[in-house]
Length: 156
Image 1 (cartoon, rainbow, N blue to C red):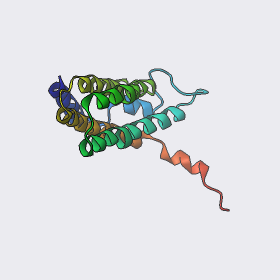
Image 2: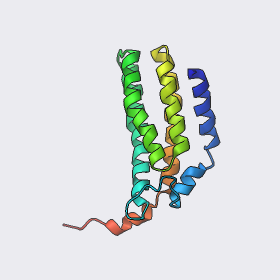
Image 3: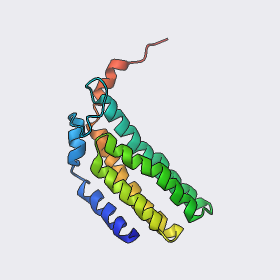
């Protein structure tokens, strides 16, 4: 299963390399499958999507790779962490309007549980971080960064 999911993640990353996934295009236009957002707006949903994608790649997956490569962690411990933390992130991706991306992350979690060595786990996690980094890039691309100009710091 691990080899299969690595291939899936790599293929999906290649598929979205130059073309933004439709669910992210939709999210940028306010089309959120679960109507997530408060008071009829979707900016908060975009903020959560950006934050969740960034922390999954830059903190969670990167941290798991760093710790697993530099320390002698046992496979069961990293699998339990992936179940708890990354499994939550997969569900949250769905919540903020990225059910397809959430599904790919859920497949990563499932495959991580079937890894038979830390080396196999790390190869799988490298494919996952590469895919999630691309998803994060596209979320950043549709985020309305200009709206932040309305929140300039006041000089002291």
